[in-house]
Structures are given as structure tokens and as C-alpha cells.
Image (cartoon, rainbow, N blue to C red; front, side):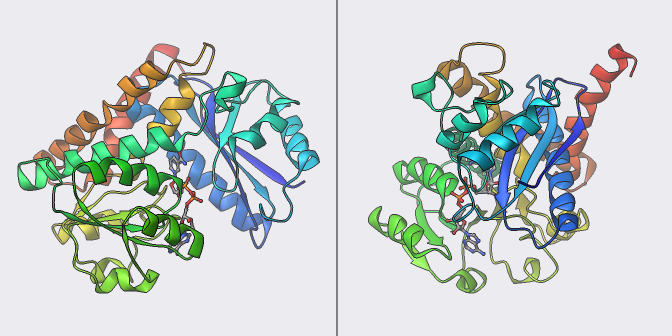
Length: 328
Ligand code: NAD
């Protein structure tokens, strides 16, 4: 079992973030990914107003072939050595059931199945947050947050996109999904959602582009090809580099920052840290994503800065204010 745990910041609370199982080519690639992801967790939890710091873990393995009880329990032992400074949960390649094996070796785990008293699948609350973030962006862009008739294209139709689409279908938005996995495409089709090939995203006119696969998708190559007014999706680290936030801003595309609108999952998990999970509490904190998205967009408009930079300012303001009282 080869795993890396990154603790980025614990000013606001213990570092919390999911564990990702991915067949990284080498340890350096895994280290870069886990460091980037842990920083994003610090900013995500800070902007969401929850009492958690930022951390993340990766296991270098193929979740389809290598995942088993001993691998997961070995990871649990690794988490336990940190004595609660890092709390783990689910990410790509993991399920709530996998967390039960980890929990055999450490108590520092959240997002356990509801049948075990945990908060369960995080993607339901993430989907709610992404949907509300989209609506807030629509309100700023078009003066109305109604998404009826708007064309929304998902890149990746996994758990987050699926849960986001359930809300959008109620509003009768025009949904299109792309995925590299035929099973995911079939799931979209069974809901009556039109599907396209992954590369066709850049040939398609749309109102909202919703990246819901992996990170780095907003880059030098893709940004000039995008035909959308808003970018709002659930994937982590959508901007390949921070300069791409400026590129998007320059083109007049409104970017709803990833970690502002995809915070529903960590909010849900936070409602299990040190207390019995309460779904109502989780939903009511997640609903605030609508207002934090509006706040970030208004900071961006006032200062003529990209929304990605405004989001960082919002998070840093909270971390710095708490750091000041802790004399760190
Ligand atoms: P998932 O594995 O269920 O879905 C991802 C989907 O993207 C898969 O169906 C996969 O086949 C597809 N995909 C991968 N590469 C693609 C490509 N190049 N083009 C098109 N499709 C592609 O994962 P998820 O839980 O839905 O998470 C999606 C993203 O959201 C990830 O970046 C994850 O880190 C992030 N996220 C998830 C949560 C959560 O609660 N699950 C919370 C915050 C952020």
C-alpha cells in the first residue's frame, strides 16, 4: 500500500479531505496531486464557513483491480498515525462502504454509510451545491436564476453530475452529457438526457459548461474553444493554472469557482465531525452556497478581478482572522 497524506492548513480545524485511489505513474505525480488537492480543501472549507482545515490523501493503486480490505485497512493505519490532525473521507475511486474498512483501523473518518450512522454518499449534497451555484451565476449573468430552457453540458456524468441533473430536470433545463464511460452515458440516456462524444463539447453551443470529471480542464487549449456564458461544475481544481482564471474573466465568461460551488460534500461530512450526523443541518449549510457564489461574483465585479481570485480572498480573509486570534 503506497499512500500519501497532505495536511495543508489546520487553522480552522483538523485537516479534512477525501482519499483518492488513482494509478499515478509515479510518486512525484501523486505528490503534486495530493498537495494541490489539499490546498483546495483548505480554501473550500474556509469559504464554506465550516470548522475544518485542508487535507487530502491519495493511494497509488487502480481502484478496479487493487482495492481490497487489506489495502484499505493499511491506509486506515496510516491515517491513525496522525492522531486526528487529518480526517479522511471518500473521493474518486472510493465508496462509503470502503470507508468502513478504513474505520476498522482509525476513528478519524467521516462519510460512513448511513446504515453505520454516517452521512453517507457526499455527492447528493455536492449536486445540490453545484445546482445552487449555477443558479447564482445565472442570476448574476442574466438577472434571473431560472434555468428553464438553458442548455447545460456536463463533462463527466458520474455521481455529482447525476445529482446535479436531478435538480436541473425539475427546472426543465436542456441537459447534454458526455463521458468516456459507456455505463455513465447509458445512465444519462435513461433519464432522457442527450449524450455527445467527449470532444464534441467544444463544438457545442451551450449556456453553461459543467465540468464534472477530473481537474485541469480549463487550460490554454480548451478555453478559446468554449462556447458558453457560464462555467459551473463539480470537478475539483478545474483551472490548470491560476492564470486561466484571468483568461476566462477576459473573455467575459462567468466562472463559478469550483471549490465554492462543490463544497456540499465536505459540508455534509463536516456535519459528522464530533457530533451525530444531521441531514437538515447539512442541507441548510449547503444552501448558503447560493449566497457565497453571489458574494464572490460581486467581489469580482467590484474589483474587476477573476472570480477565482475573489474566492481565494474570501477564504483567506476567514483563515487570517482566525489565525490572528490563535497567534500562529
Ligand atoms: P465519478 O467518478 O462518479 O464521476 C466522474 C465521471 O467522469 C466518470 O463517469 C468518468 O467516466 C468521467 N470522466 C473521466 N474523465 C472524463 C473525460 N475526459 N471526459 C468525460 N468524462 C470523463 O466522480 P464524482 O464523485 O461524480 O466526482 C466528479 C468530480 O467532482 C471529481 O473531480 C471530484 O473530485 C469532484 N468532487 C466530487 C465530490 C463528491 O461529493 N463526490 C465533491 C466535490 C468534488
